[in-house]
Amino acid sequence: ATGAGTRYRLHAFTVVHSREQAKWCMQHLHSTALETFPRSLSVFDPSENDKIRATLNNRYKHLVVGGHHKLYVFEVTKTAQLVLKSDFALRPAKQSGSSQEGVQIARIAVSGPRIFVGDSTNSVQCIKYHRALNSFTMFAADRSSPRFVSALTALDSAAVCVGDRFGNIFTLSVADDVDDDISMDAARNDDGFGHIDLLPTADAANVAAAAARDETEVGK
Image 1 (cartoon, rainbow, N blue to C red):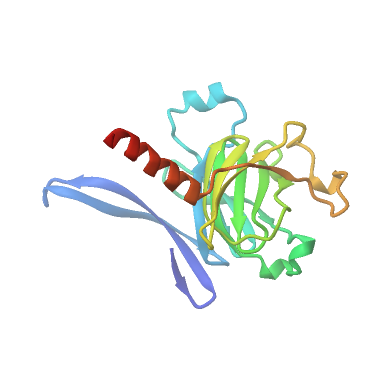
Image 2 (cartoon, rainbow, N blue to C red):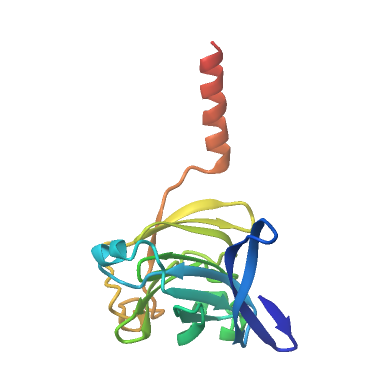
């Protein structure tokens, strides 16, 4: 991604083998303008059927981009052009005291049509992209405490592993009774949001201590 003034661009490249130079080279295909700096991006397949995704041979057709407080979904054409399909603005948690403009997307992880978003104040929010309707549903979020997410990876369609800027590592999972077709605006919670269950995870110190004990036992 490159920027010029208040406009930014996403560049698509392909890797080709040059016979003349006898090496692999990158060939520029397309550039797409963005209003915000793209801090995180991921290819994904919004198909809800696992069998359909398997038949695509991992040829992802969509790209999700996080910039400032907004998500952008692009469709990747056969000529590698990025066509903007939809965008979605994240809402701040009430306890964070931040405005919508204060939300900064830091990391994105995907699993099927589910998009897990980690930002600078709200920990992790779960969003589903509905391809047929070309719309988003925010169906769950971690409201246990404000967190600055610095690392995020999807373990499966209902769980993520998260790291924050203070070195904490933990896992989060979506509750079994959460319906990802229902917006959190219709949830029972007083703050208008659903919640992600926080799963207990051994901290780094305990993991290191356990590893040291194992090495000691092996040495004996």
